[in-house]
Length: 390
Image 1: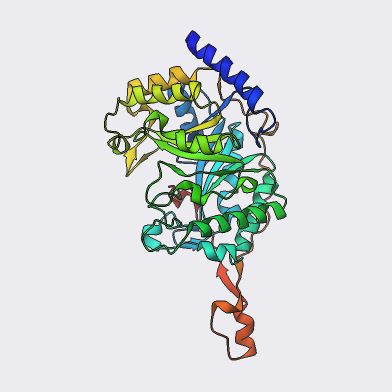
Image 2 (image 1 turned 90 degrees about the vertical axis):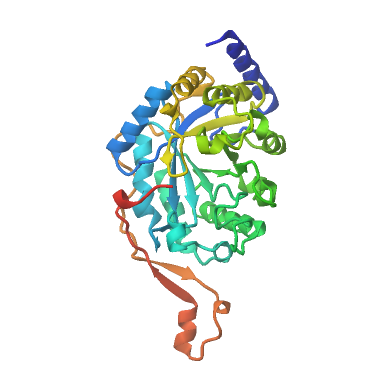
């Protein structure tokens, strides 16, 4: 470790303890530490998740305190039980002595094909309450800390819960109302082991800035960002200057890829960009308290750390700094790695959607009027090995 890094770390630790001692957020690490994490694409069985975890540890030189993974309300056009489909992922991550950051979306991951999404207005008026109640109960039963980021990158143009998505009919006010409604459900069910991470994209894309989607301090524990190599190191400034005095910052996705770097006119190269990123955290952004590398090879780009050897070496050298902690022991149960503790109770085979009579024209018969007050949707189980991640 370079002596300048040691000095910077000491200065950051002192600054953090003096300036933010009274405002430490839920699950925020102390003493200037930064949770070291990674998004790992296959979390559907223990062996494959462990293999990816070990691989990233080999390339990064460090364990991951946070494992980022994705879930969605619809899977291949079907609304599925969150407990049935995702509870075991929580257990698998816990066995690694890591904490989950769940990137949850109300749209189908296969939206381009199925066009399935829970409309934000319907969420706000309670149509999907049964789904979110079961989601909340699952998290509560898990008991250990969980980070949840809902409908991320809303200030872009590529997700149908965004105001800027063509034909969405969504407004930023709809986003805020739906976010608050879901958080209220979790709180009412006693799922208080969630840290809510609001995660816009950097930079803003389109005419509606991230700030228009902010749910408010009372409904947000952390401010997260997606930050890729199309950005200069100081592109975090607008978000940081707006929120860092009130909330810790979580870089929920970051990585390099040729498809992203082309947006940076004088791109310095992958290794240099990684170096600049870490330097900005060490010297300019002390309130960044968690980072999660996007360890994916997807259709839209290869983001793997080991894609470029000098990038991987630079990352490993920087992450060696004691500031970047791989220790989540204070957040993970002592018996992690043992028997699964999430109850496998019987799952109801349908979710009752609470709808108001105003949804449809007034029915003509008493029986029809009764039916209009509730709509039943089959809650189907999807074989997890066939579910595609983001």
